[in-house]
Length: 91
Image 1 (cartoon, rainbow, N blue to C red):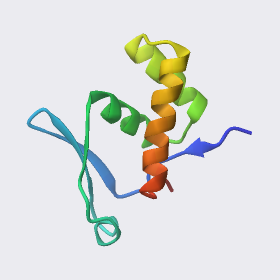
Image 2: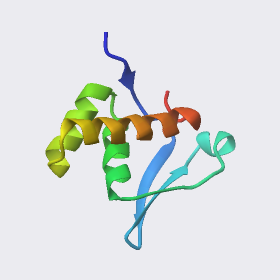
Image 3: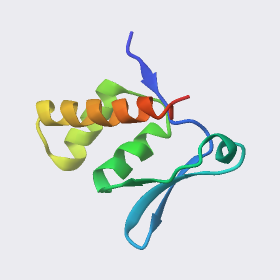
């Protein structure tokens, strides 16, 4: 069975002056006090992770959006997911 990933409720992605930032709102702001900055690719992945999605589907989405090969997409998604897991940002 494929693991399903979903960003915790209360983490919002915003674009501010061409930069992408993730901030906590509501109850989540008591638990998460940092601000995360993302590049365009990170913002794309974060948006996809706001809905429930498997890693395999996330890789396919990244390949389709940026026309990259499977190996590159897999490495990028693995690194991004690991950083979010390290930050305990998945529900």
